[in-house]
Length: 225
Image (cartoon, rainbow, N blue to C red; front, side, top):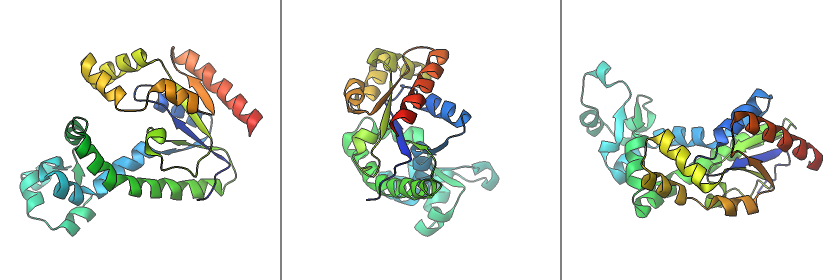
């Protein structure tokens, strides 16, 4: 596997603030590869396979009113090839998420479908940025869980205590404490991730504290690379 000496992975846990850190890095002129954005695009490209594996009820028409048709009925009338190439068709991520987060077997099916394609796209984008010879960041929420990214060897964890993660997920996702706790615990424990990281960006406080933490991280990065 190729090595990327200019790449640093940004990871953490749900609710830790990876997106906020990446936004601060973008503001400072750094390029970011966003694994979540890539996964959303790949998921929609795989709409036909998602329907085949999980059911057509997880496919939606982005502009159903324009066709004045029931999205599921229209889906059932199409071939897989038409679905795959139709940008008006997408996967209902919220509905599919409700299924897979409650059922590890279903989650495993989804991961088997998506992860090879997501990894290939991340690798392709990383090769393009590495060729520029400048520091760049790769936002991969499930870096430690996936164990598919051995071509990256520098990892920064965005850290917040577990209880803070739970409170943030409750607020952001509109979940009760038990549901938020379950989402957090689906991932590797944040304390364990902290010990495995090369760099730690503390996001247990407010935005001003996070900005200071990012500046410390960049200085540390400059000293080590």
